[in-house]
Amino acid sequence: MRVGRQNTCCQLQRNEQVNNMAIIGIDLGTTNSLAAVWRNGTSELIPNAAGEYLTPSVVSVDDDGSILVGAAARDRLITHPERTAACFKRAMGTSRRFELGGRTFTAEDLSSFVLRRLREDAEAYLGEVVDEAVVSVPAYFAEAQRSATKRAGALAGLTVERLVNEPSAAAVAGHIGEGDEDKVCLVFDLGGGTLDVSLVERFDNVVSVTAVSGDNFLGGRDFDELIARGFCQDCGLDFDALSRQRQETLIRQAETCKIALTSREPVIMAVSDDEISASLALTHEWVIRKSSSLFQRMLAPVRKVFLDAGVGVSELDELVMVGGSSHMPAVRRYIAKALGREPAAGAKPDTAIAAGAGICSGMKARAKDLKKLVLTDVCPFTLGIATLNEAEQGRDLMSPIIERNSVLPSSKEGIYHTARDGQKSIHVQIYQGEQRYCQDNTFLGHLEIAVPPAPRGQQYIRVRFTYDINGLLEVIVTGRDGQSARLVLQGSGMSDAEVEERLKELEALKMHPREQEGPRTLIARAQRLYAMTVGDIRDRVADMLDWFQKELATQEAMRVAKASRKAGEFFDQVEAYLGVGDLPPQDLEPLAGDEEGEE
Ligand code: ADP
Ligand code: MG
Image (cartoon, rainbow, N blue to C red):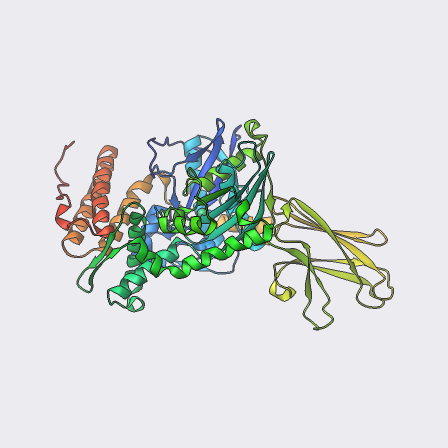
C-alpha cells in the first residue's frame, strides 16, 4: 500500500518545551502495525518512511548491532532467522525470552521497537512531538498482556493510558456510530496470527461491545503454513525434513500465492533449484481443502459471542470483516454463508482498526467534532476473589465479581462471610480468569482486612471491584464496622523505576536511522531474494545488489534515489516471477545498471 506523498524529514527535540503534543492511535498487530491520527474531522492514516501504511511487526538485530524494524527486518526472517523475531505479540505478557544476535529481549521490548518506529514516523509526518497513544489490543488479551502492551508504550516514550479492543475500533471505524437506527454488528477480525470476534451494538449515540471471543492462535500465518505443507504433500516432498530456511522460504512463497489468489485463480506455486523442482496450480477449492481445520475453528468464537450476548443470528444487522486475512474470498464466503448475510462493503480489512484507534485517540484528546460518540467496552475476562473450598481442601474456588463481558466501566460488589470461628482477619485474593479453581486463573494481588473475632459466618465484608475502560482495577474491601482497605491494580507488575531502568538499557541500543531505512530495506530484500533463487536469476540478483551497494557508497542523494528505484523495480520483477511462477525468467529485464545518466 503506497501513498503518493513525500515525507518531510524534521528534527524534533523531545525534551524541549513544545506546545503541541500529539496523541495518535496505533494498531499494534501480530503481523503488521500502523498508526492514525485524528485531524480535520477524520482519522488520517500515517505513512512510514517508505510511504507505506503497514509496517511489518518484525524486529531484527543488524550485523552492526543496531535494531531494524519493519520491511527490512521482515526480509531478514529468511536470511538471518537467528537475529530476527516476528509474531512476538503472541508472547506478550509472558516470560518468554527472544535471543537475537547475542541479546535477550521480551515481547514487550520488541513491541516497544515497533512502537518507537511508529512514533518516529508520526512525528516526521505531523511535525509534532507525539507523546501519547491509544493502542488497540485483541479483545481476548488478558490483564498481563494488556499491561505488557502499556509498558511497551512506556519503553517507546509513549504514554498509553487507554487500550481499545481491536474489534471495537473496527466497529467505530465502520461507521456503526452513524445513522439513527439501533444496530447489531458482528466484527470478524482475522489477522496474521489471531482471530477476534465481537458483537457490537449501537443504541442512540452509545456504541457498546456486548460480547467478545476469539482464538489467539488462528490467523493468516496458519494458512501459509498449511499451503506450504499441502504443496509439499502434493508434490511428494517432506516438509518436516526441509531446513528451516527452506521451510520459511516456502511459507513466504505460499503467502505470496495466497494473496495473489485473492485477485485471480488459479495461481501457480513453483519451486525449482538443484534440490527440488515442483509446481502446482493453487485454487480456492484446493486451499479450502488443505486448511479445512482452520475453517472449522473459525465458527466456535462466532457461536460463542451470540450465546454470551443472548442475541440470535437472525437479529444481526451487519457483518464487518476486517484483518488482512478477511481479504480471502474463501473466508468471506464461509463466514457469509454461516451467518446468512454478506459482509458490509466498505470496511477496509487492512486499515479499519488503525482508523478506529485514530478515532479513539481523538476521543481521548476530547476532539470537539467527536463529542457525540460514546464508546463503551466490555471486560474480556472475569475478575473475582478466592473463596474456601470445603469439599477439596487447598483448592480455593473462584467467586466472580465482575463477569466476563460486563460493560465497562463496571462497579460491582460481593458480600463474603468469615469461614472459621474466631477469625481475626480476612485475606482477599484477587484473581482473573474463567476457571473454577483459583489455581488455574491468574493471580492479580491481595488485601487483608481485620475483623472482630466471632463465630464463623457472622462477620462479613463487602468487596467492591471497579474496573475502568483504561484497565485500572480498584478493589475496596469494607468490614461490617466500617473499617476498609483499598488496592489499585494497574496490572503493570513493573514499577516506574523498573520501566525507567529498562528504558535506559533499550535506549542504549541504536535504532537504525529512519532516513536510511529505504536502502537498508532494499539490501535486506535483495539478500532474501538471493536466498530464495538459484542459477541465472540468483546471479542477476547478486549483480544488482553489488551494483546497488556501489551506488549507495557514492552517498550522492540523487544517484542513490535513482539506483533505489531501479533496484526496486528489478526486485519487483523477480518477486513476481518467484512468488507466482507465471512469468518465464527470460522476461526479466536485462541488467543494465552501470550505464550513467539514463532517464
Ligand atoms: P495482524 O492483525 O495480525 O497484524 P493483518 O490484519 O495485517 O494482521 O493481516 C495480516 C495477514 O493478512 C497476513 O497473514 C497476510 O498474509 C494476510 N493478507 C493480507 N492481504 C491479503 C490478501 N489480499 N489475501 C489474503 N490474505 C492477505
Ligand atoms: Mg490486526
